[in-house]
Structure formats: structure tokens, C-alpha cells
Image 1: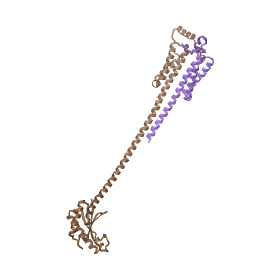
Image 2 (image 1 turned 180 degrees about the horizontal axis):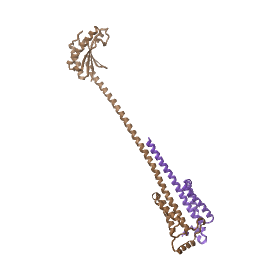
Image 3 (image 1 turned 180 degrees about the vertical axis):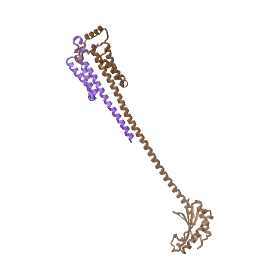
Image 4 (image 1 turned 90 degrees about the vertical axis):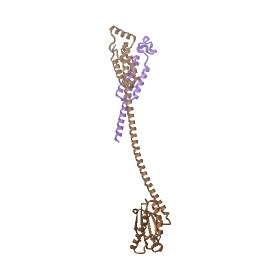
Length: 302
Length: 120
């Protein structure tokens, strides 16, 4: 019956005691209807554990608690010794609490792992985003560099083309080598015709041979294509500046007119008189003076 | 019914001896002490709930040893069984508390990380 001794005053269990207890029960005519508080506690503890995380996360411990409780309940329904029932019930209660604790712990472990995973994922996402941004910037830089290189290449190409045209023009005109002296200068391709070839002394009428030569020059210029031609007349230093200026202009215009008659468009060619301003040789020698007396055709390539 | 499960040495206790003269519960004593040691290692003394259970376990072991000395082996046996399961519970509670701390720390670390990354 209930309340038989605490462990400190443990009543020794023996068959006689048990039989006596059973007998008392039978005499009383009713079963031991009310379970000891330890058994009630144990049942509560199990119900608690069963309804918590232990069910899914600590099934082994929960099962152990269940078996333990079953043993205690059996002892009770079999009418076993009261102290035994209490002992079994106590043990069952602790096991139920162990199951509950294990379940909770597993839950916490998962939460911890979850947080860890989230952190990892977050780091990865940020890293990815940064990598992407970097790639983008890199691509932009590459594109800029490429565009720059292309522009430079284009400029170079144009320069080379211009050079080629100049060279071609020059080459064509150099075929006139017997006819005239051709030189590439910054101001364009300069064709120098000697004054004595073109005109009689002091005159500004073209000699017949001059016309032939000029025809060749006109052909060469037209074939190659050009932008403009400037005809410059020059004299030596003998005579007045004014007279030389006038003569040089007249001669230049003569040459111009003839070239126009050979098909050079008028709006692309002009005549200029430079008088004795720009000598190319020493005016103190006959040879030098002869060289100074000249007409220059400055051809600007396209 | 229980007496049929008594070890061989004590099998005839109900005939020859008073039943308090059952075998000395050495196995249970060892088990209980081992469980207490395990709980101590897991830090149970530092956790309030666990510490309570651990003390209870130790007290019961002490009492059981006294009962053994008084040849109340049956009573001692059950005390030791209780002590063992109390110590197991103390262990479980201590480990649960440790994991709870770790989970908290992990959550805080995640919050900190989020903050850091959004501030950039």
C-alpha cells in the first residue's frame, strides 16, 4: 500500500509482505485505484516528451522512456509492491525528461547548423556579386582599351594612306625627271621647271618645248589626282623688285592658262608671283641666277 | 515476482537469509559513479538545472553506500538505479545547455555578418 517507507527506512521486500498486501487489497474489495504521484508524474513527463521534439529527433531515447513507463504501469496494474512502483515510475520520469532534453538539443543543433549554412551562403552570394562587378569593370576597361587601340590603328591607317598617295603622286611626277625636278616637301609635291626651258629671256610667252613638257606634267597630275595646284613664278635678283614681281606673276599665269587648257580645272589652280623673294641659289653666280629663274608648281595631293 | 530476477548468489535469499542480504550491487554502484563522472565532464556542475540533478545523484550514491554497509543491499540497488538515471539526466541537461549557447552564438554571428555585408 501507499506510503510504505522511504528508502531510508526501507522495508525489506519479501513474499510474505507481498502476499499480505495482495490480501489486503482483496479484502478491501477494490483495486489500487489511485496511482502513486510518482507514476502520475512519469505519465505526464512521457506525454510531454512524446509531444515535443523528441518524437522526431530523439526516437531511441523516447522509446526507452516508453518501455520504462510501461514497466512502471505494469507493476502498478499487477499490484506490485508500492515502493517498486515508485522506483520504476521515478526512473521512467527521468528517462522521459532525458528524451525531451535530447530532442531539444537536436533541435538546437539544427538551428546552429542552419545559421552556419546561411552564413556560408551569404558569404558566397556576396563574393559572387563582387566577382561579377569586377568582371564587368574589367570588361569595360578592356572595351575602352580596345576602342582606343582601334582609333590609333585607324589614325595610323589614314596616315599611311596619305603617305601612299603622296608617294604615288611623287613617283608619277618623278617620271617627269627629264622634264622637271620633282621633290616632296611639307607644302606638297613641288615640281620645279627651269625658267630657261619655259620662256625666252625677259619674256613671258611659253616656248613650244615648254608647252610639250607642261602637257606631260598636266597629264601626270591629272592621272594621280590632286586637290590644288599653286603656280609660283620666281626671278633672280637682277632688275627692280617691282619689275621682277610683275614678270614672275605674268609667267606664272601663262603656265596656269596652259595647264587649264590641258584639262586642269581652273578653280583648282592659281598663279602667284614671288619675284626675287625666294632664291634657291646664290644670285652672285650665273649658274645661281639661272637656278633662281624658275616656276614652281606646288601640288597638294588629295 | 522480482525475486526471481535476483542474482544467483542471492537466489536463495528468501529461504536462507533475510532479503536485505541480497548481493552487493557492485555493478550498479560502478554504473552510477560512471554516470556521475560523465555528467561532471560535460559541465553539469556549471548548469543550474543539471547541477541539481547531479547533486541528487551524488547524495543517493552516498546513501546507497551507507545502506550497503548496513547490508540493506536491495534498497541500495534501487537507490543506485535512481542515481544513475539522475546522473544521465544531468548529463543530457548539461549538453543541451551547451548546444543552446552554441546555437545562440551562431545566430549572433549570422546577424553580425549580415550587418557587415549590408554596410559595405
